Image 1: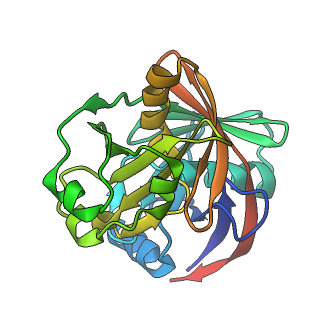
Image 2: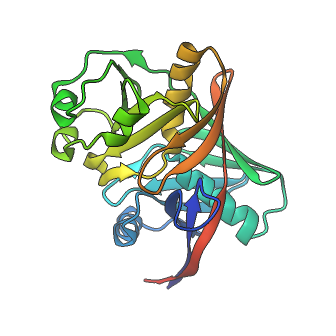
Length: 259
């Protein structure tokens, strides 16, 4: 059996930037263990599978080690494949997922994802985070992930956390963030327990970061950068109980999987 596969650089304007995701369109679901094996073989932070439904498309996301509830950059990558590679004719794609219905709209050169908001709450800094980072944070919160706030962008950029301590945390991962001079804020994301030492650009992180920075900066629209090695820029906006995330994407490769 042959399956189509695309590798898309999400939150990027040219190849070798942003966050790469593998995209596999399906005609019917494969066994879970096969999809997990494909994701492990791809060895990217996310592989997304989708198939057509009556309402639109159904998405499932896999890291190299497990299926996850939400992945923003792979959703953006799937929408890019549908719009730009497969000729989807409408402005908006509706995706069904484990996180509910997700819409992606094409607006000029942007793909705009509408994701559910996940407001973080303050918490004590876990000992594992204090041990993993040599720089002391000024604040810690939790939602789907821990959000660790540092004093400066330089602190965020310099951080080299020990992944073995982060693997012990109860939540998915750790987002570190600070204000920025060039952007509204910057961030990095680590999820070693899911096989992701550091994610280049993490769409779902901004469902948590945007409401936090709304409370700190008093604004609902943000221009931000994830300052990983590859890096990626995006815009996001808080609208009611959702986050609209604006990003671009580009195709790196197209091929076939032989099973």
